[in-house]
Length: 323
Image (cartoon, rainbow, N blue to C red; front, side, top):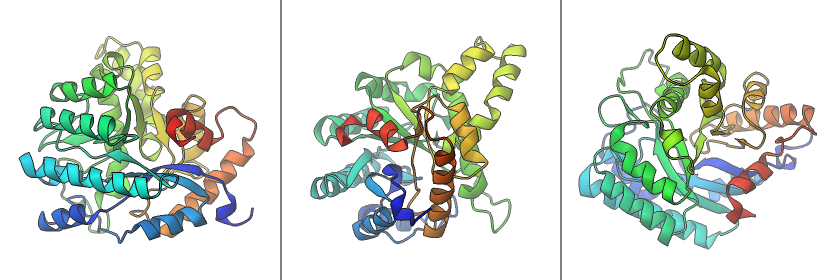
């Protein structure tokens, strides 16, 4: 295999940006509760990564904790500023960038979140919105009743929703060398996905298209276990097959998951067309991104000819504006 740049990834749906307004707010709030350090970022560094990794277009998003570091009017103001900055970057580089809009804390003020959805999607032309796996001080995941007005607004617009993990309610480190994004984030994604299935979000808002970060966390590995335990124990009205159908209705990005163990499992689990390329730049170190990009390309090359192996084509079907 040649250089990484010769591997055509096409569309990167998991590509973060760090506008100055967000960096300032995060610093003033005491930093990221997950324990991850804020990396350096600029449009130029994004473009450099894209050039060396065969990426034509990156969809910018704000990683966790996002605008939830603030509350009330300041959070809504921050979300609007973040989205205006993303809109300006997209307009200045229309083929290189798109964006998933940031929202104010959806559990605290659903009306403000819906207002930002309307502005971001209807006025700014965002490619979708970002939601985090959990909101508020407790276990309020994406199936919570307080979020239903947000899901209704997204469903009305047939929106794409990029679900990114955030820190668990308990932020105490298990080990000083183990910030939450290393292990906890994938499990938080799994918890949010199962909550959306069991709460009826997928059933009641069927026109929303949901991307799960990092290959769906541990969902492909645990879905069959959960499906049969929940059904056989009488914990849900869903049959095991119905649960698995819901679990496979998500889209999945490959960020930090392009390896010979994780990616084949995901490709076997997800329906054709539901796997998308993701880098997790700039929070993932560039060597880590390169490792997963090359390994992922090798997995895909071995399955060439199977339906759904063209990740760029999968992204274009989900985000036709980029075609």
